[in-house]
Length: 312
Ligand SMILES: Nc1ncnc2c1ncn2[C@@H]1O[C@H](COP(=O)(O)OP(=O)(O)OP(=O)(O)O)[C@@H](O)[C@H]1O
Ligand SMILES: [Mg+2]
Image (cartoon, rainbow, N blue to C red; front, side, top):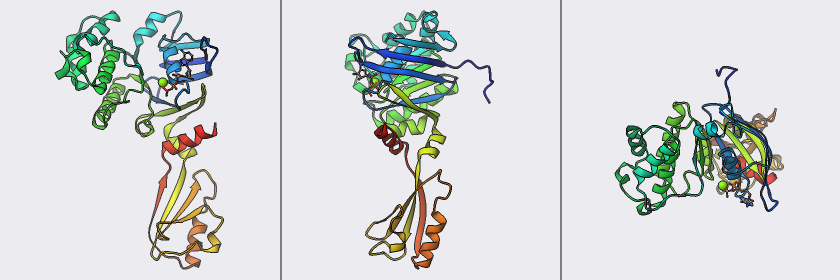
């Protein structure tokens, strides 16, 4: 249990952003993130994810609203909030002629932290960049550059880490090792806010999910309860004998005959009081339809997401 007096890692109230050309990218966003959470912000291209992150990181100036990082106001205590934050930006910006080692070490220096080569070494090793430490950034691949951005963001030991599409262009193996590192970071008390277009990553990683669409945070929810609330379940019945068509008594129900008549798939709402499974079983028995196997599967976060954003 978290003590009730714990200051949230991030507290956003009434955040709005209208860009100079008059485009409203954020419409009154309220969001609280507790210390130690992994929060995934999901939304289609142009939804406002980067705008939101950049507003918190002091890169985009909000048009209205308040932001507090670990209890510090991001205007009156700009320096404190900036020191507490690490950002892996969506756009990779690096000095092509600088070495990996210097890039990360200088970044720590910029935050006024005392030199700590042992820490930088551990960081580079954990991100599989140690053997590249003396390479200039222009010599690295895209995925390696992204990992350098992560090392940079962690160089000053931030408490709140923003990862804006950190795994774009990173291969599958490295992606999974990156996420392992993110989990390790969380173990050390770091709060993590990430965006990703790989929804299965959010599903695997996040404790809580926020969905943003057209500049509005349309939902924030604990991942497990979100999956439960919005997820549909499928009951898959492998038949002992194939059917040529659905029996008339089953027509009109959310049931499909698939796999050349060898499988019945019944879709139901997990929240529905009577999900109809018992009646379906009775009906199969009445119809003398026998089955070999039966299984259920829950819709993925990706399906839920498409449903939500499609509706909005
Ligand atoms: N400097 C700017 N001036 C005007 N409009 C902008 C500016 N920056 C972003 N926008 C607009 O604000 C909206 C939100 O952009 P943002 O980059 O926050 O989206 P995003 O959710 O991060 O998208 P993606 O998934 O593509 O990264 C978009 O419509 C974008 O065109
Ligand atoms: Mg973005």
